[in-house]
Image (cartoon, rainbow, N blue to C red; front, side, top):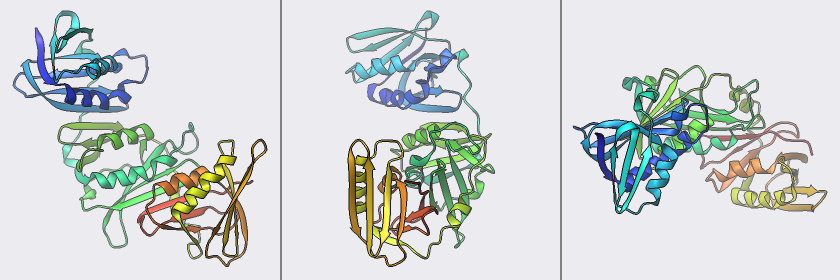
Length: 379
């Protein structure tokens, strides 16, 4: 007999919950739907490992290990079993032919597993190339860029990823930057950090797939500080009891600096952010396709928003602004505006519009480091 353990139901459930997106992808390699469970007799923890060969996660949870051993079990079914039990503690015991018995109060389950020897090896990495950062910085980077990652397939650029960079600002303060684009809009967020980011081995173009970014966001959610770094074309995120590793993608990314630099930032309109969100939501009620076309008509001290649908009707909404330049009429995807404005915090935002053909830039004084660029569309 091997691998006999007692552990907390709640901690076990939380760990199993965090791996479901990784093990849930259907594929030709059956064992990737399993979670590897390992325990050593002289340790007070068990280790759970899951991978889809692009992402890998390893989680340690406290346990009373009666006998050491290892096994892989179907992650979804194990999660469902533990979720439905009301027991405070779980006992698991490995038997012959990779069968494991799970006891929870008066309930007992026998689950067929697969040998741990068939499970892919967890990637190795260099701990010396990692730095500690506040998770608030990473959350800001992700939350203000992930919504504009492309949903489309391959193109000239790898737009299904986030670009991740490091550099120094004009005051020589270290900063981290994330950029996303779907070809119709671009979001950029940069934050200052005290960490020694010179240790970080960024690629020439460090591209993190969207699924990887989503997993990072969940992984760091309940932590104040994490360590992260790069090694062997991977990004590694570490907490006290867990590790997340994501394979980086290859490809090119648009020259976002050039896109932003061509926008004249001397002329702008200033408007209340919440007012514009609410107006946009009213306008897209009268759009029926994925383009969510809303017309902007700028004239003397007025922004008029209009939308129309052949089948439904039309709508318009006028907002008073300070504007005395030439009249402009241009179209935008209303959903793009809403998504950008909803991640901002500024009460007043500045919208830089140079012409009816040029992209517009959205910024806010209370959203330091954030830039949103949206391309106009013909209506």
